[in-house]
Length: 394
Image (tube, rainbow, N blue to C red; front, side, top):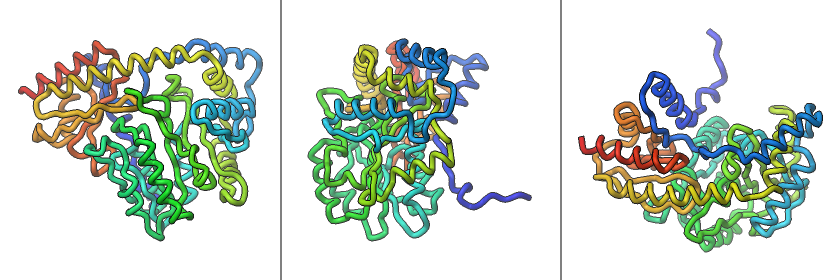
């Protein structure tokens, strides 16, 4: 029997895709399914972005691009970063990748190996832990607590750092909780990290503009004291409804002081995916430089849905839900139902036709919670709440 190396047996996965496959199969079998499980906007990519890709194809942009991305695309990301964070970054620090996950993969394999620790948010995006375990490093969960508004605690995070800690992963606004960490807490963390100059930071800021109620996203880029060890993950998927385009970007330290990380990720790109396709990069430029009306319209819709979701969830027996401040997820507490999260999510899909994700799919601290994506219509959200209420009543 052929045998792979042990690392591949340690790989986890993102269960949202398994739930999507199950929901799709049930729908194809004739069952009416409301999918509140998958984390992607239900809006179409704005038309001017689509047209930019079509024009690129018609203009003959069919060949390889640089491993780091087209200079024009990297310059567009630098302009956008200045607009959203007030920080100037060089295009020579910007890397264009086929989605957000390649940045996670690159950062974690650069720092992960047996004998080292990597800190990651729990509950958090499941690929963090999966990739940490793949490298043989020890995953150290940073608790993300409901009583803290699902923001990370600087004090609790810093207390977990040891001489074995190589990388710290942060995420705000956060998946799966919708939590947004306040600037004051981030300032405390940055101050505390002065005592740990050898710990690199991966800041997942893919939901950066998706905040509500006057909340403001604070980018780690705004703290020059950590810039030489900071990797920032971002991309087009969420903001411009471009999940299927597989377009991400990240900002890396460059030069000796920053460990030559940028050149290392360039080499990894050459070995793994060569480059990102040209038409999508031209679409990415159009997304950044073009009108943002569709983004604003999408965010207004998400805000309205968020209010409906929170009100509806808090009306359910045994369920409570704090108001998410970012992204497009709610993370209701279902402990009062007396049910475990994953069996409840499975039963709601099979018996009520509502697709949700059980909290343990996002970490050991996710038990007692379920993730609900409000990237669906108001009508479907209200129907889903009704179905959940009927199921819980039974």
